[in-house]
Each structure stands twice: as structure tokens, then as C-alpha cells.
Image 1 (spheres, rainbow over the protein chains, first blue to last red):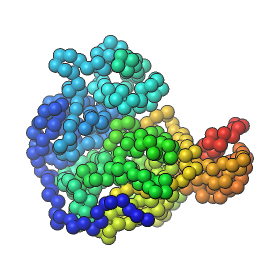
Image 2 (cartoon, rainbow over the protein chains, first blue to last red):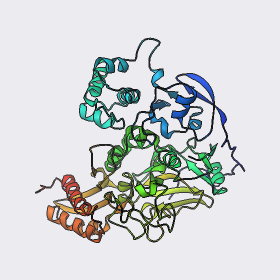
Image 3 (spheres, one colour):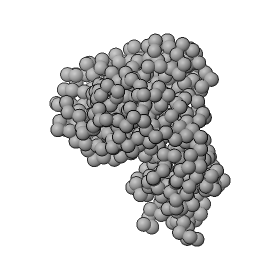
Image 4 (cartoon, one colour):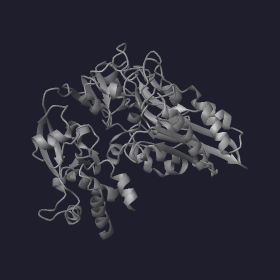
Length: 175
Length: 331
């Protein structure tokens, strides 16, 4: 059985450069801007954004990858910032809720959430919106059932789900 | 969470050499298990070697109609791949029914094979657990074990294997390709997942520093007619109580060939070989499905809390086979 072309027993460099455990200087590209920050390698992307870069839009809900409040995009894909180490994002594009608006012009999904009253306490909302915009790009919003399934990684304790789905439908149908 | 240091590898050989040379280093792929369990102090590596830049993301056709899935292909990419959806629908379905959209973008296929169990006693660093701390005992045996396994269990561990996609893959006789200190190895998937027995801390035959580089899925014509049926406590974003991956080759109402595997009920992705044996050559009717399901679950060892799983698994098998063969389901 032939194996694909992966070099076997290629000469390895003796030692990979190792960084940390003390704070190391890394550069994160967030919303199109390079930001230098000193963090320990164990620091999550979520903590780096909130505690070091004053980007507090992404929220810490569960901090264990279950609630979706920390949803951001890395290289254009929605991911959980709490289970992503900041240092692994060097060289990648990070987008947060703060990067959605164009100046004072809200993103269509942000406006739709306001129009449709798609939140109560608002804590999960940045994650919901980052997920919702990604969902439309991914093309899984044909009906409410599909929207619910593909938004299931974002929990809303106020149960604003019907209005969240309405906001997503609004933007979907405008496009 | 303890301090860690970090290296990023750009070549497979570098990553393998770095981890193999250091018992306190671990590979880091999507991070959905690793970072979670680091924060719980369940995993305690000194250093993480980031493998996300390794060139292992491809999904390639094989001459036999099968596929080779790079270990760093993300669950979402594999689920959307036309070759997977057309030729192995049960694989695509299992992927889409697992976790959430965000986690599927993060989690790699190799990492999915290496993910750790969701047993609450394993994940709680202060509970006894023979998997995390060999010889310390098992908190689940007399604890809250409603979600735990009923097949492949031992008196040392009853943790359920959590993967969805590994269930159709074991039905397909997939093979895990690894690169390690001793070169390239290929492991049949059914041998890759170890039963807990007296050594639940040993989950795979891999040596330290051996890296999963790809998953080979042999071609199988009847897999075009396959399905993954998942039963869970809520409709989405939840682990399976029971699940079934099934592929059937049907001719004139007779089952010429069949592949069947169970998830959510066993300590490893469970190939239902006894049921397959009984179904091969049998008429595609509810009686045959029930007989096969009953025989496969005959070995179930249950607790008062998870006893329902044996019956639920039997019904899930019957439902999956009935759906796939278009058989009338008299409930």
C-alpha cells in the first residue's frame, strides 16, 4: 500500500526553537492591525484580546468551549477564542466583533440584531453575531431548522433564539 | 493552568523529533481537547509543539475509490468535501452531527482520533481515575454513569469513546497512518483503539512522539448507500447516547453485505461484527434486524443508570437498518 508523499525519516533539525514559559513578545493581526503584546504561551486568544488589547467584545462565558460567547474568526473561520492559544495565532488574521462595523456604519447583521430585538442581556450577542455572519458565508441558513442546527454552538441563556433566527433571515433575504 | 512553553514545527520530521526526544512535550493541533484539559490540570505537558503548519491538510482520492484524509484536515472541511459526501455519506453525516460549527472548524481529523473521553471523573483532576492516574480507582463505576459505556467495559474503566466520525470509519476498515521515531506505521482502526481492560491509561498503540499523519479510507461501493443515526438528549451539540453507522448492499430484498458500527455505547468505536455476521445473507426485514441487534448487545454490562442504553442501542440499530433498506418499521 503506497502512502502519500510525506517525507519519512527526513533529517530533523536537532532542536525546535522553544518560547516561554515566561511572557514572550508576539504580534497578533487583529481586525487588520498588527498588535504587539507580551503573553505567556498558555494565555488564550480570548484573554489576550480582552485583558491585553482592550478588545472586550468577545465574552468569557464558560471558558471551556461550550457556550460560544467568545466566538471570533481566525483566517476567516469562526472559532472559539477560549480554546485557542494566542501564540498560535501569530501569522493568522484575527477578526473580532469590533472589526465588523465600517467606522460608524454597523454591519448589516448588527443592525438586524437591533431591529429584530435579538437579545436581552446581550452577553452572548457578540459571539452570536460573529457566528451568524460566518453562517451566511458558509451557506447553511436555508430555513429555520438549518439555522438552529448551525447556530447551536452559541448558547443564549435569555433564549432569544427566535429573534436571533429572525435577524439572520433578514440579512439572508436582503443579500 | 500550569505554565507551558511553545514551539511551532513546519516539517513532520521536526515535530516528531522534538516530541519523541522529550517525554514532557505534546503535539498541539486544533486544541479543542488539549487546551481544555490543560486548563483542568488533567494534561500536564511542559511544552506544546504546534503542528498546525504541517502540510497534512489534503483530502486525496485513492485508486481504489477510497480516500486519504490528511490528519490536519479540519472536521468541517472533510464534512463538506464532495468526495466524502458522495462516496461516504455516513462519514459526512457523523461529522456534521458532532460538536458545533466552531469546534468543527478547529478540530482536526487526527485530533479527533486522539481526543480524550468525556467521563466527568477523568476530567475532574481530584477524582480517582484509572485512566488519568493508573491504580487510583474508578469514580464512575459507582458514580453518575448514565452516559457511560455498556460494551467493552472492564472493572477498571467504563468511559465511553466520544467520537462520532470514528464510528463510520471503523465500519469502513479505515487505517491510521503515523510517523514516529521508528518511521511510518499503519494501524487498522479497530486495533488503534484499545479496550480498557486492566490498563485504561493505554488508549492507543502509539509510542511517545508518534504522530497521526493521515487516515486512509478504503474504497467501498456500498458505502454510497450508508447512514449515521445519532440519538442524544438534545437535538444538537451533544454527545451520542447511542449511534449507528450502517452501510448495506441489498439485492432482491436480501442483504448481500453489510457494515455496522455503534457509537455512544462502548469504550471504543464498536464494530458490530456479530450483527454483521447474522445479517449477511439474511432477508432485509425487521425480524432479522432485531435478531442481529439483540445478539450484538447480548454482551452488554450495564449499571442501574445506563441500563436503558442496551435497549436504546438495539432500537437504534433496527431504525438505521430499516431506514437504509426502506423496510417497513412496525414500531
